[in-house]
Length: 298
Ligand code: ADP
Image 1 (cartoon, rainbow, N blue to C red):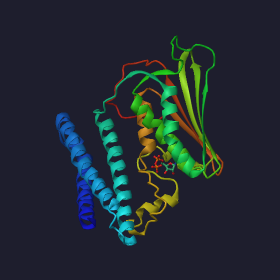
Image 2 (cartoon, rainbow, N blue to C red):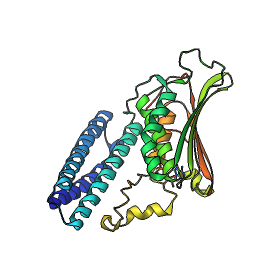
Image 3 (cartoon, rainbow, N blue to C red):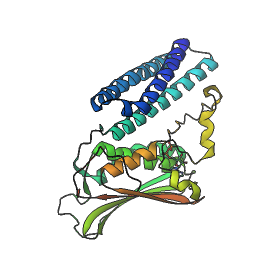
């Protein structure tokens, strides 16, 4: 019921505080093995109650006897916040694992065109609901950059590459008004004889102010003041839009994944005209991967 949901949520927030404070001090205090166990435990401890709240709220919302509109509204607020908390925990765990070198990366020959097709199809519903036109272009140069059956192949972790581009494409859609376009383009290119793939995500949205550009990859950074709404008490937030707020970690994660694949990411933007994110990934890895190092500023 509602009070159970609320008390579970309060408990979860307290536990998240405990987890975050642990994240801050643990790396200096304890051994690598201890940290590994801590992260695994924290992941389990935080994910389970979140899933439990989500199930309880969904059951309560599906109850045909739930007639009071205020109760429904409160439950929807809990559902939305729990969803957001779930995303935040997932994103924080990703970065905690990245920082401590515990992120498992499954390097395999990986078709980047398939990655982008999957991302675009997954994001199509969001684009349609916002009236944004979403396009994907694959541009083969004709020159065989890597002798392979698969011209858009990179060595990488499929799921992580999906996560990288999902963050970029969903941002593009989120910040573009209705009737605007988001274009995803994949090209082959050669740089000093080394074959690269260039993936671009270009939107016709709000743009990013020049002074904010150096910070967009920072953790928890948000350039758009309207998004500070998330600081308003949950009950005062509009629930009708059903919009899930971002965590402010999407671009930090995208950059970390790019770094893990020896790639580079850049951004250029014009206010009220749009933003272009360019990700450049080598088709073959040039050096031994060291995932324990923190991402460098690129
Ligand atoms: P969030 O979860 O807030 O989207 P991100 O790390 O993905 O977090 O992005 C950080 C900030 O960069 C956003 O809050 C927004 O201010 C800005 N930003 C990211 N992508 C875009 C874009 N395509 N257009 C305009 N602003 C963007």
